[in-house]
Amino acid sequence: MRTSPDHGTVDLLTAENQGAFTRVLPNGAGSEYQFTLLFPADVPDDAVAQQMTIVEAELEAVRALCE
Image (cartoon, rainbow, N blue to C red; front, side, top):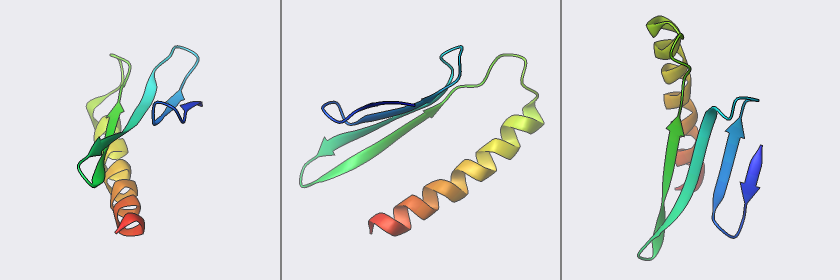
């Protein structure tokens, strides 16, 4: 995990510097949460789809906590 409170970032990385890159960006009186998830080229499509289902549920939980 690599974090930077000054930049509003939290990155969850593998040894190969792949993983999830997150940012909180100012937007008027609020903010936007940007989430980028990188997969190695050899990951099967069904594994990506499974992971995205998990990510969607996790992001809904984050949204519920923030609202």
